[in-house]
Length: 211
Image 1 (cartoon, rainbow, N blue to C red):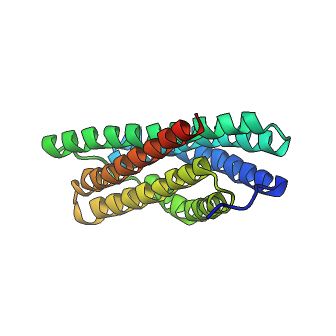
Image 2 (cartoon, rainbow, N blue to C red):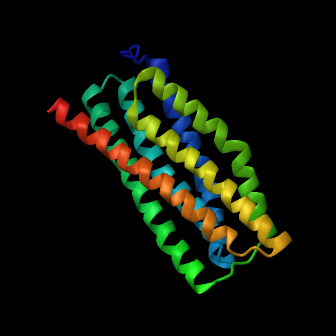
């Protein structure tokens, strides 16, 4: 079924959602990276890296939808393709990083610290990111933007990573289960790898069809 034509209001709403994603991830994602480096939490640093990459894709999408709103259709289409490709590569890179680090951590028995600030960061992400991911996903389906859809899944993966980070930090602090952090991050890596492969295949198929 062909999606309805994208209207100027749709483009402006998509740009606002993408800009909000950038603002949120810059603050919370940056803080998560700093906290993770000091505490050694693998899932928390995975969440922080995911937030940084999500912001990069969202910046491209802000440009894409502003161009659409101003009638620059060709520029918007090029930005759409770049954002979708960047999202696909981001999925795979984050998955690879998490998989390698998780296996190394489990093999070495390395233990991270559980910090109250890290728990608060992960909990805050669980309160905000689901609404952002859902809003972008529903709008992407309505206007037929695969790049916005991929970005919404990238944001949703931030929800999953924050949930893993929160569970791991709490389990570590309450029960001493140090392995919960790398084990959870490894499961998320498998999901991200699958989604990244799917996104890049769809982008390549679309490029071939248009060419």
